[in-house]
Length: 90
Image (tube, rainbow, N blue to C red):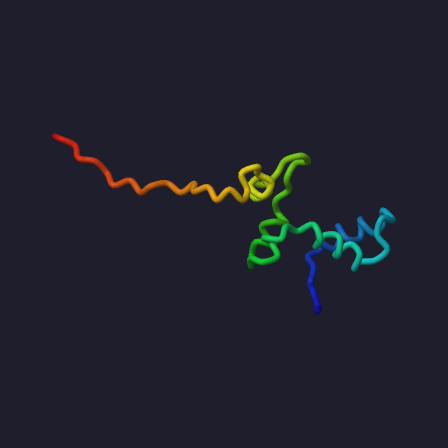
């Protein structure tokens, strides 16, 4: 597979290699890709959006919140009933 990187992406990879934490470009990319959420890997275009967003340390995504919820598996119905309107006398 051939991948074209933007100059800013190449700069980031070079900086990471210069720290000595990584021994190769493959290692940098493996680490970066492993940090993508599962949802981003299954939805086209979501990878680009996930790469743009950064979550502050200690903050959870809504998906993480629901996945770790104590209500998980209780089969609760959170769907709203459709509003049928009401009659108004004028």
